[in-house]
Image (cartoon, rainbow, N blue to C red; front, side):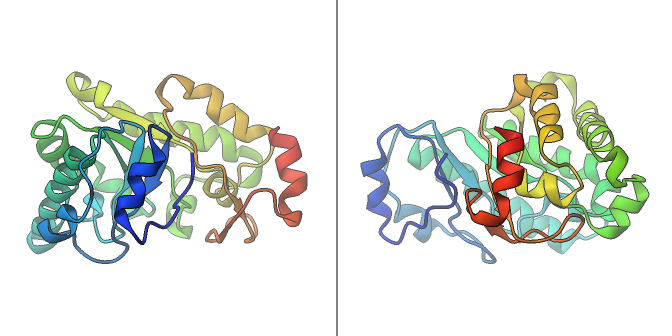
Length: 231
């Protein structure tokens, strides 16, 4: 996958053909019909749409205004996916204890909008855990891979079985590293969930373990040792 290639001229998407590709139409702003209509009409089921950072379904509990904003934005992402001909939308899994505790509320909203209305595939990406979530899950370096796998399994088990086919897992190597999973242990995560992985974010990070990730190409010099273990 070409990760987060910036499209300044949206018609450039046409040149990509059927190649796997990720776009992030808006970082910290809402989508709009006007913005969606700037994209060409395509049929590329291999495009993965990364939702914006303000579209956080697991932050809506007891916040009606935020729920309204997230719901409206999810509808726009469903419309954008229809326009460019893909079923794949990427959303981050919970990153802190509050989001983790509100998971089922976010799942229900996602199902109501993107699954029931638009029949889209939700690719859940693991993010770097906040300190409070890491402590809540009792994650340390020696148990990071086992705890991470359990975290993902526990969340997927909360998805209603009749909709489970619409949910996939997207591992990000930089995020896994940020959560204490290194080298060959990353492959254990891949193996555990290989039947529900459609996309992979193969990223390096210049941050240390257990700290917010700072992406950079995985082949950069300070990532070589980790890359060799993965390969």
